[in-house]
Length: 85
Image 1 (cartoon, rainbow, N blue to C red):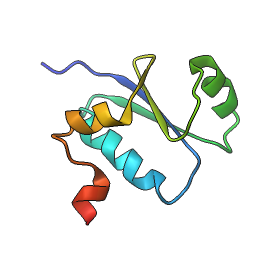
Image 2 (image 1 turned 180 degrees about the horizontal axis):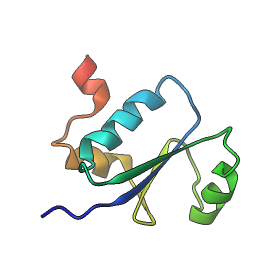
Image 3 (image 1 turned 180 degrees about the vertical axis):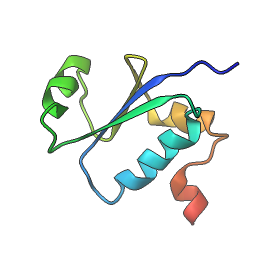
């Protein structure tokens, strides 16, 4: 049984953010809730400050900031960038 997670993704809306989002989606289960926060969104600054996010893109899973490298390891060591090269 898979436990659904609440996943929050913080991006600047750059071209490179596409692969970051794909990496997040690749590790998420079908029941997981994924919420994107673009830098231009109204709630972005409030949520960024709440989690003390220092850099973008960033991902928060169940209320905890997750390192992108750990996310890649959960995706069998492959990032979107590597899959498209």
